[in-house]
Amino acid sequence: MRKDPLILNVDDDDGARYVKTRVLQVAGFEVIEAATGGDALEMVARAAPDLVLLDVKLPDINGLEVCRRIKSDPSTASILVLQTSAALIHRTDRVRALDGGADNYLVAPIEAEELVANVNAMLRLRRVQGELLESEERFRQLAENIDDVFWMFAPLERRLLYVSPAFELLWGRPSDTVRSDIDSWIAFVHEQERGRVREAFGRLAETGVYDEEFRIVLPDNSVRWVRDRAFQVKNTAPGRERIARVTSDISARKAAEKLRHDADSRKDEFLATLAHELRNPLGPIRSAVDLLRIAGGDAGQTQERARDMISRQVDHLVRLVDDLLDISRISQGKITLQPKNVALASLVSSALETASPFITAREHQLNVLLPEQDVWVYGDAVRLSQVLGNLLHNAAKYTPKGGTITLNAAVCRDELMITVKDTGIGITLDAIDGIFDLFAQGAVAPDRAQDGLGVGLSLVKKLVQLHNGRVYAYSAGPGTGSTFSVCLPLAHATPAPGAAPGPASAAAPGAARKQRVLVVDDNPDAVEMMQMLLDASGYETASAYDAPSALERARAYRPDTILLDIGLPGMSGYDAARALRAIPEVAGAVMIALTGYGQARDRELALEAGFDHHLVKPVSMAALLPLLEEVRAADSSTSP
Ligand code: ADP
Image (cartoon, rainbow, N blue to C red; front, side, top):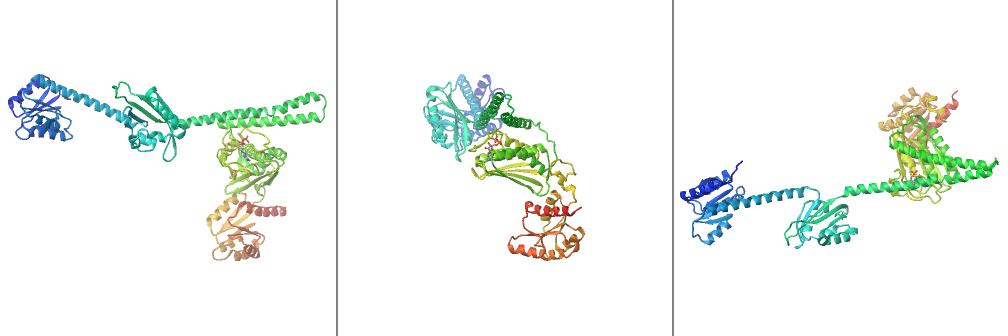
């Protein structure tokens, strides 16, 4: 690195040039020399001196022109030029020289000290300028690379000196908006905060403080939270006061605060509900105990009623506490399922065991529609009946007395779908989204029998999820009733006889010979899907894709039931049915026609052709299974 500043001394007069070089060298500068304008330009480009001491009079190119060329080339423009000339030069030359870009001008005779002092002053100025530029550059980089908006105002002139590019992102508008009108940013502050912010910003000059949080409304009407601070810049000269301002996006922090606040208020609400719920049963219990005391030895009805009441209320308390414990165990991942193959019928009956008394007390009518055949799921029997019990309990609770509750179960593909539908108060669209959240509670039924903790549905969802199932809530709105559906995967294999306890186990499909179903359809996907559904429901299946192969297959397979699509290629389904009926091995089979049309005429044609039943596609398992079940029932009643 060069230690001393390098000076290029340009003069065609050897004597004068020599003297100046010596003076500068003695003063500690490194000096190189040129005698013509051409040489000077070439050395400027090559050696990049800090300063050129340039005489005006040169043999080839005029010194003023040399200076102009140095200053007009961007790569050399920053080199200092000290123009010198012979005595008695005209004042206008001096002006021309400075206009041409020279940084200073000296007229001969030049004293040694004068020359050195001038060179030093120019170099010092350049150094300070350089440092200033560098610090400005650092500031600019900082201001332009942070997400915060940085502003600098000249308050006395009401001028915005600088605003960083982040303004455009934060305010969602071009920064020209505030450059042309420095107060225009206020118009985009949310109207609820605009007055306060305007006033606080206006007081800044007098108080010296401004620190506000507010919302900015973006052109698309979305909202962004910011913290906006401003302060007077210290150490500025009088009359040149500056105000610096920083605006930061705090939307993320505000969102987190809101979540925390919501959670806090949900927790407070929950604690209030919990206290209320725990206290509710205690009143009757205390009265019952008093009653027992008064009744003394009277062993009659009073005592029995008091005991019943205590037992009911204690059951209720236990239920509440159990729900709470379950939720906390699930949240901590401590709950373990004890899964096995469970029959739907046994789940339903144990759920009804707990829910029925309450349903009856509320005078509801209860309909239970289960598939005729046994359906099995793989899961924890206790937990799954808890799920159904909770849904039935809610249905009874949120339906004014005398309503109707329907529990419906159907097999759909490889899932079991259980639906609990009521005619109660319904659920608003707003409430439905968060209904499975912990502590979520919606509207209260006019005669709501009993309050709860807002834990039940959250428990339902978590338990169903633990079983790889899903649960949905549906309501067309307040007053229109609600429907809750639980989908659970079906058990993969038909359980071995005796694998699952419960009322349905005696009728498990494995106990009897499996019914054989022949599925005939020219759409292989439809056939495959139907076979899967039937397999899952405990039937044995075979398939054929056209009439001739159906006839052949039927002869060999001897199905109990034939599902025959009417729209087969080649031979119509009706003709195929007649041909099938003529085969002795199939004569006793139940034949079900599947058609795309539901007209009465199709039905007649089907029955005429020898079909026993007629179903319209797409066929729901809920419609098909009862027909298949009839076959099974007939079969088992005739078997020994
Ligand atoms: P709880 O019944 O203890 O309040 P849940 O978690 O069981 O708590 O239910 C949460 C909320 O969902 C209830 O407060 C109620 O507003 C709504 N809800 C649940 N089931 C029904 C239903 N069958 N009909 C209408 N609203 C219901």
